[in-house]
Length: 461
Image (cartoon, rainbow, N blue to C red; front, side, top):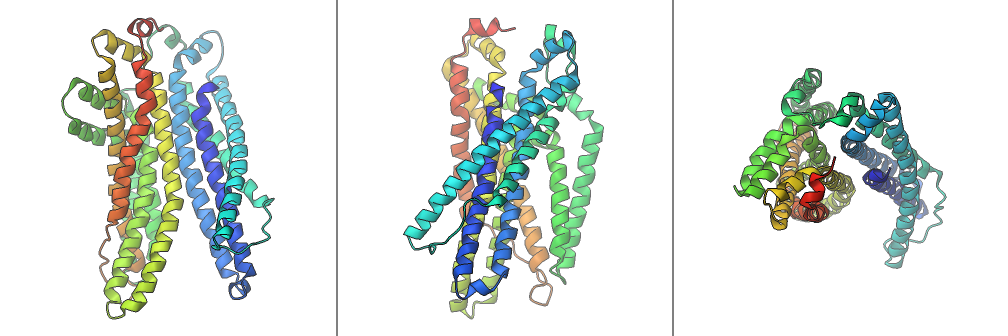
């Protein structure tokens, strides 16, 4: 159970975000109702509730994928123990049920932490906003029964994600308790034809719907709904086939870090186990893709407004301010999902290093010093982060432009080509964030690797 703390952290973050967002939405709705002008309309409150629901769903979706990947890594580390239990009579289903039960307990604990932390954070936000006259005092009741919904969602998704992530238990054989158990190699993963074929079909159908949405959007803005369905399907295909998609990107990125022994080993570590590498990177790919998609769409909209209203700069100035505020708010909301994904990568890398004690000890015995081990872990972390960030940027740019074209291509009456906007500020922020994430993700694993004694590690069974 002690190796489930990364899952608890992800569940607590998702719960905190959901509860905080619902409380803040309730506070804004209370302020709107108290206003003489907006209080008569239910439209703004309805839109606030809709936006809150969308972002809670996004956060829960990302946390479910991160949780599933984290649990899969935990199971990989328990392979020898699970095999030993199988050897003495326990069934694979019983072991899987045990891990799912742990997921349920962790989900309940994470949801409880989320309710308390989210409510406390919302109260702090209200006090700050009222003190700075950003919001009027309201009679909002923090005993809002609606906060139960994200808490229940976190419990259910953590439980189900634990069940999905623990499916590897069914493949553990009792003989692995007395022999060296090796993770699936690239060839074994390549034979998973059903999953790979499904991924290819989803990507193909999704791209077809994206193109259809762009074409329909030239005459009808509702084409964006077709494009949205295409984006979801194609991206689901990318996630499903991540263990095929990510290794080539990782291998290409690994070449950028030189040919020193530490760099070469780090690059090889990132691609020798495609399943583990995809688990560590796909969550971050999702987060970066979400942020980039939204930013590119809004920048494309800004560029269209700028071109259409050059003759009325005073009107555009007001719209530009509104767009800047909207982009800032929504980027923070989507960025929280990216934060959950980034923490998932840090957790998974830490667990991966813990499970490679024997390998690290062997490297020490072969002559690697502590500095070389530290550089190897840092370069491995950097390769994973850069590969995930680049993949997310490419996907997000494509999805963002397709969404903007489908939504705005016929907005002015005549079909127009929407120039894709490049959110340079967001790109810069992502690059800086990637550098910070590399350092954060490598600190604990590097320290753990440097403490490995060759004798102790080689003695590990």
